Amino acid sequence: MLQLLHDREPPRVPLANQPTRGHWLRYGADLGARLWIKRDDHTGSELMGNKVRKLEYLMAEALAEQATHVITCGGEQSNHARATAFAAAQLGMKSVLILRTDDPARPPAPTGNILLDRLVGAELVWISRPAWRDRNRLLTEHAERIRAAGGIPYIVPEGGSNALGSWGYIRAMRELALDLDGIASPERPVTVVYACGSGGTGAGLILGAKLLRLADRGIRVAGVNVCDDRAYFVAAIGAICAEAEERWQLGANVTEADIDLVDGHVGLGYAKSRPEELATMRDLCRSDGVVLDPVYTGKAFHGLVTELRADPNRFGSTVAFIHTGGMFGLFSSPETIAQVL
Ligand SMILES: Cc1ncc(COP(=O)(O)O)c(C=O)c1O
Image 1 (tube, rainbow, N blue to C red):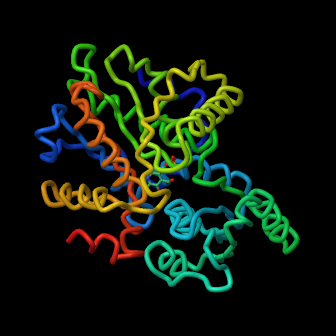
Image 2 (cartoon, rainbow, N blue to C red):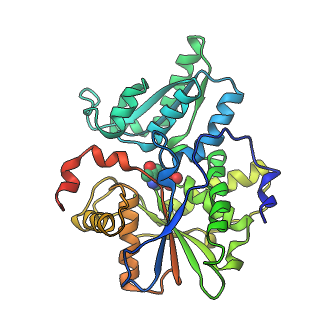
């Protein structure tokens, strides 16, 4: 089973602590399905979360191109931007982060991920929401600026979500398949549930599941989108899978039917929390000592719990929830979570 991936696997620079551990949760004993959690929040400290798995492949390409600077973009509290800045520093490169904020003339206070971005010395470029639409052009312009000054730029796309980055979660799916040995079977199906924000994690998990033929072992994959909607992510994930297929001829044959998204849990919108989402985060923390973040994992986990309350059989006998990190976001607005304490 394991050899299926390796011969096309691109070079990887080790940055993450992996394999990550998984464990059962006490939370949700009344939900009708057992909950197991994979701790990808333990992939690192500065590099914590899902992004570092993608960066292992992206930064390997940056190193091969002898890049001096890595450029990427994201929201003001972007976990991806922070992880990219730290991966760059750990590999001896500089970083430029193009960050979206309400008023670029008055950048946000250095809290949460921004504090870390500042600490590691990333160059921060603040842009408005309207300018965000042009982010790809801005990435190219900053790359040209660096090249003109004698540097070698490497652009990491938003969220690290392209075909190369998706290898991080093809690899993680291989880990998960081993984790779920003895847990999943056709008679006792397991659904791997993750928070979907730009589609790269989902693309990797789906490609990995297809390559390893995990459906035959009772394992399927479902994402809870924390922004946009099902149609958006079917297209985004489909495009990443198609790009991977074109580049490496994996033979995974991902179709729309493989891209399962559990829509309807975006709530108030991206990075906006409802009290019930925060209450679920609090309750999980108190029952199991596991901290989720409000933007991604908290929202997705609350969506999962909401689905199970409506239909205990929705995801089979067991859910394997991937904790994709994001804890620093919690410290950007402590007053938010304080509402439910
Ligand atoms: C903590 C966390 N979880 C999940 C996601 C979603 O992952 P993806 O962008 O690969 O869909 C992100 C980033 O967007 C994140 O920072």
